[in-house]
Length: 143
Image (cartoon, rainbow, N blue to C red; front, side, top):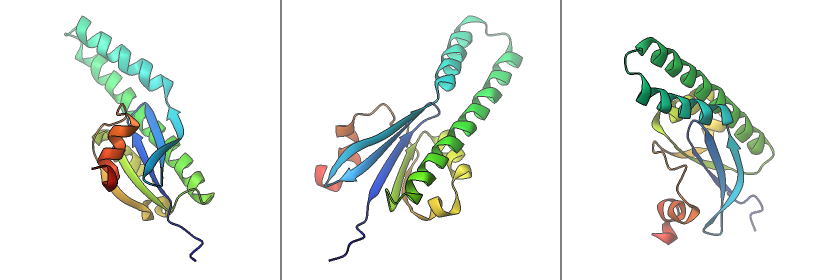
C-alpha cells in the first residue's frame, strides 16, 4: 500500500484574510485562518473616505498605494506560512482561490517549491463563502 497519500489543501484569500482548508475524505476541514487586521482597518477607512470628500485624489491614491503595500506584505506572510506547512509535509497539492489583485501578489510571493505543487488557481474573491459552498465548488462529489 502506498504510504505517501496525496494531501490537497485549498487556500481561499483576499487582502485581509487567508483561510487554509484541507481536503479530507471529500470534505473541507479548516486548518488555519490568517488575518491582517491593518488591511481591514485601512479598507474601512478608504470606504469611509470615499463617501466623504470626492475632491482630494492625492489622498486617495496615496491610500491606495498603502493598501497595495499592505496586500503585498500579507501575501508574503501567507506564502511563508504555506511554505512552512509544505516543509512539514502537511500537504502535497495546493489549490488557490484569491481575489484577482491578491492572487497576483501571491504569485510574486510563492517560493519555487510552493509554486510546483499548485494544481489550480481561481481568481475569485470567495473568502466569505461558507465551507458548504466551497465544497460544492471544489469537490466533485458535491456537485
